[in-house]
Image (cartoon, rainbow, N blue to C red):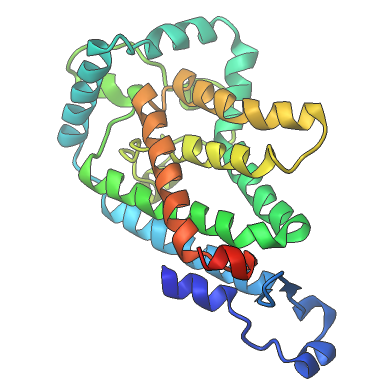
Length: 276
């Protein structure tokens, strides 16, 4: 990862003459330490990491029995600390069909749209901060693969399909309107159904708050930044896709990603910070 970020953050091709003659669309963002960022290289990096992530995540899919056993184990942990309230939250939400429909669409789209917007926002408005937060996101996402491989977890919506204890969770993506569901044959073939721990939805939402809150000025924008992870955690629970501890796992990979990124991402931080 260090080599990848060093390559992307380096000043390769930053000779003055080549920069002057380069088409406008190819010109990079000049950072405070003299290095450059190129949007097309960033897109390639994100796509490569996404392909690696998707491939490894789906290969690491475990058998249902192991995922179910881990779910019962996690539920036991949550009951021990008084945190198993997911079913009660879903029952309450199911009384408001429009809220469930909105939650379905939110679950399937907002985390991707907000994250891509966050990357673009940093690149355009705060390029010196971009490297740190891009690297935080990529490392945190790859760290999630460790959880998927070592602790495959059946989400609440699938528990009753195993024929064991009756938990009563509803798969809202199947029962209520949405543009996709994990129950479709296409999604079953490309998605790891047991990649619930950690919740990348929640980890990415926390990343979004860290990116937006200190950089937006209006009170309503700051409010949205604070509400983003709160709403995301609520959504993943009432749709039956995650447990409370999955959100905790999302926070862990976000913080770990940030800690590692502080070491490996140096572009734009200037000679003083880079020397720390």
